[in-house]
Amino acid sequence: MLNEERIKLMTKMAIYEKREGKEMLPVGDYYKSDYVSLKMVTTGISITIAYILLVVLWGISKAEYLMANIHKIDLAYLIKKIAAGYILLLLAYLLISFIVYMLKYRAAKKSLKKYYKQLKQLGALYEDEASVSDSLDETGGGPDHDEFTGV
Image 1 (spheres, rainbow, N blue to C red):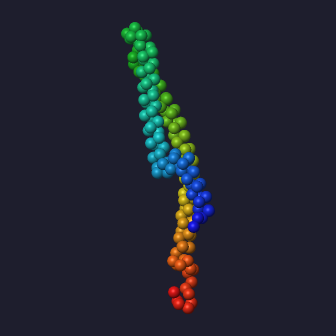
Image 2 (cartoon, rainbow, N blue to C red; image 1 turned 135 degrees about the horizontal axis):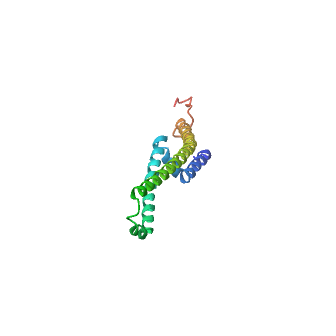
Image 3 (tube, one colour; image 1 turned 90 degrees about the horizontal axis):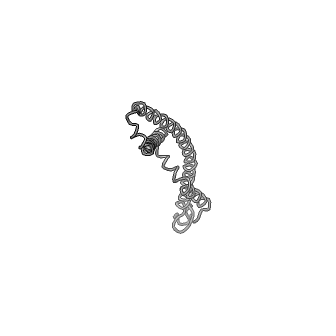
């Protein structure tokens, strides 16, 4: 027997799983601190790789000047300047990623709370349907026994 309310609820849940759920459902597997920490580590690794590439590209673009003036360049100052730039960029991006992923985690938890509520409603609908079908016997009769036969 088709239950229209159950079908509507299942359709809503399927749409959620297909759209938002792809991003939100994996977030529910983490604690807030674990999720944010993991995302900050990946951001730190990405920024480190990007900064190294930028420094290498800068070095390649200035290679002729660097080779011609290598004896005049203060390498300690240049390394300190590159390191300071890296640290400032890393701190800025880590702060931004902390804020972004905290907000994303909160939004995901709020969204998942609605999804789990719908899941409980669906379970209750199935339980109600199961209790109704259990109360009927094989012949389609009700739970009341026949007074004459006692069956």
